[in-house]
Length: 124
Image 1 (cartoon, one colour):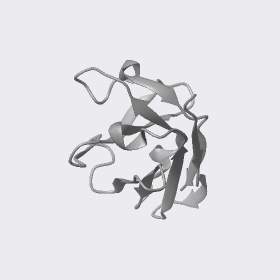
Image 2 (image 1 turned 90 degrees about the horizontal axis):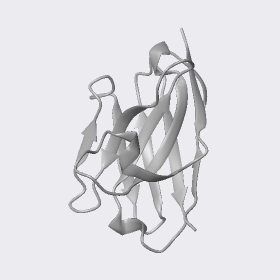
Image 3 (image 1 turned 30 degrees about the vertical axis):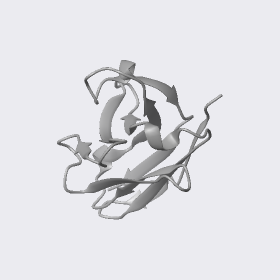
């Protein structure tokens, strides 16, 4: 059974930074692309970023490009999301997820395992 556990969320002022972590159980972590999504109250879950298992390419939503950085440490089975220059509109529950299949990287249905989420609140 694969388990994903996020941590690192919290309350921060606009312009501040947070680093989210997602620890993943299982021995095949390095063979999977890993993504981050977020969901604000009353809104659908939306794609934030993904890091591809081969080559380490990364993709970002336009709304976070240049401010957020995704990375992974395969030795620790952990994926990170460094969030800088945070804005109030970044407030949401952030989820990490394991990419399952499919040609898209930004669709919820292409991810099979999800963490429980960590709350990020950015005050103005």
